[in-house]
Image (cartoon, rainbow over all chains, first blue to last red; front, side):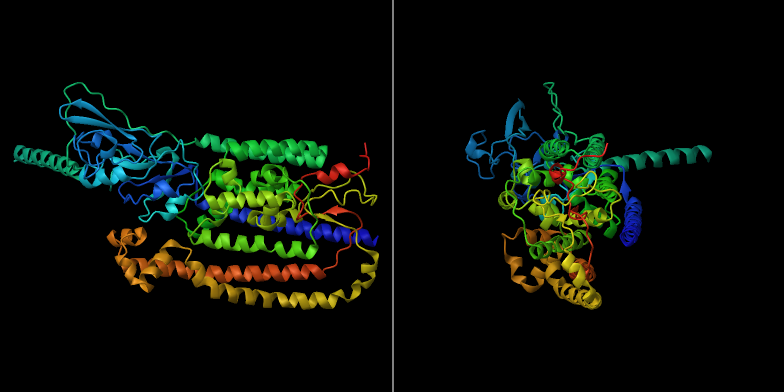
Length: 188
Length: 427
């Protein structure tokens, strides 16, 4: 008899606590629903904010980094003397390794017609260090720039590069517009 | 006059169009304009592979719900440890190795906290569901999420070799760590400083097979500890486990060790690797329990004292804690060590100096964040004080237990104990 009483009292307290916890969760859901979005969010680099510090190559949780250099061909000048391809003090205007700026030789140079050359990034070799981006932005049109490649990015809850980016160039964008490629994306 | 004005408007329109075109071009000025090729060169496209689609996120939510529902069915109706085991293996493979352990309900509490503190931070529906669904399930069926649906939990569960029973005082003391971790995680997330739980997630590096050195060390250390201490991360660190503990304590239905009624055979006592089985109360203790009321009162009155002390410590710590925020850190560094401005190798300082942001703006921003830390840290301290007070109070609350029962809050619903019970199921 007394045991039954204790049991029903316990059950009553548990029921009350359960309802109040359910209400609390409902409250959280309600509040969160105010700022909710149907979209998925992914990380991306704003190429106009990027200062090519080189941390994209080292801070990403992946090795090599999910950040790669992309080439906006519309903006490229197809120069012979490319600031993104050649070292500033290179010995010769040639494809020899010692003249290349890229540490992994990920940029290939192809002759098209006099005097123009096409530059293509091999993303399997690119480590996202941004050296070519710095060269291209300083001396050329800035057609080379860094982007987070979404076939590689694991979309961490908080991007490790974003946290250490000195120019706050990495932000969350909607997955439907996951890239900020120069040319399509302009500085406003 | 009409014709004249028409021409004038047309002229103006054309001129405006020209102007916008020219300035538009100027806005995208190029040092070396793109050449016009004569050899019929076809320009390649810039490749932009699409991210994982939103539909796949919904698939994850569906899989999570299915795994938890199945787990609840295995635990409550089918009473099958075997079922839970296979579900765990599936979770390890799907949420662990396939999804990289990063569809995490554990980390989602930070997203929710940040979306509360910062209205501009959008949270997607699937993330909110990942936060809420395990709690809802736990409110009805106990911690079925921990038992079979959490990749971090199952990787530890599957490697238990020889679990050591820990003394109660040690468990209770170490059990305070998750509360502290939760308070800090919420504080750091809400101030937009850091996602602690994700940064120090020990197992995600193992799932991904690629991690920074510290993460690897942490993961291996937890797994090695886990051979002898069941689920060390879940019990003594997991901040989400705190919330699940609360909801599971009052869950509507919960795993029972025996299918009918307990015969106190003690066979189940050694079955739980997590010390989550409460024993029947010793009759001698029942006799001596009448002086508990006074102690209860003293401990209850001590709670506000604990909270005040916690709040004070939190307030004192807020300046130190706020340095975890990169903006506050940078502002402080520039004020206390102005000589770093000359340091060419300090990327943060050099980038700030060459940016358009002024020192006043930075300091103003840092002040705002520190103010948030002041209130947040005090509240977090008071919360930890409350938890310490409640834990102590719990020690003197007398509960009468007739049988061997699972401790609903601590039980992970793994179902090991069910296999040990010799009582036949009522048909």
